[in-house]
Length: 290
Image (tube, rainbow, N blue to C red; front, side, top):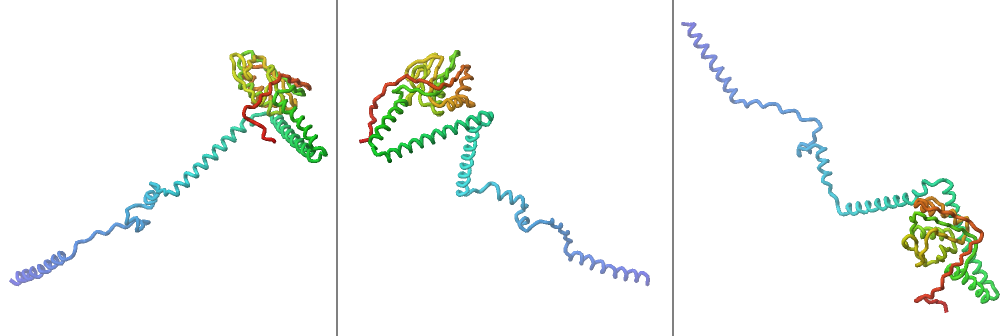
């Protein structure tokens, strides 16, 4: 009996303890799992926006936000760059013809430029001497008449109304293929004038300031007068300047030779240009001197 009572008492003693333990577990809150550790290097802005620094940089740069002032400056800079590029290209094209020239050709061109400069200096000196003579002459009226007569002769040579003679060259162009055109002969005349030619005659036609050339069938028309090959130029001027001017690289001789024409140039101490042009009275222009 005593054992049974002890067992009963022991059972009654353990049951309340187990009951109180279960009650405590129900009253405690549930376990909360530990939060994952934050990534190192993450800023508060990135946590707020959910974007990385690189993403925010890209978003700030694109699409670009251009103000009106920035657009105007960009257009001006573009125009300036384009102008500089065009200027450099034009300068390169102008000097490309001389880059491939031989040293002898370059020396000849420089000599020609020096000769032209010297001619201009001589002309300037002559005009200054004429002014000095007019200022210092005791009989200025007589001196003026002499200079007027001399000037009339010079203008007559340029206008083709008087015969001219002096040193120069004779250029003959044989065009058996019929490929030489009026513009090629005009280039030859212009090159001769630039080299200091004072009187030019082509196949019996005097070349003056108003001379024009045109193609005419198998020949060329000069001031309405048809001429055919061989084309013979009689030119008065300094031979040392005229002949090199025709033979510069890319000049008249090379251009005509590409057209299978034959060119011969002969220097002479006396060339006579006797083809004359009638003096034409101007229709509208009048002298302004009293």
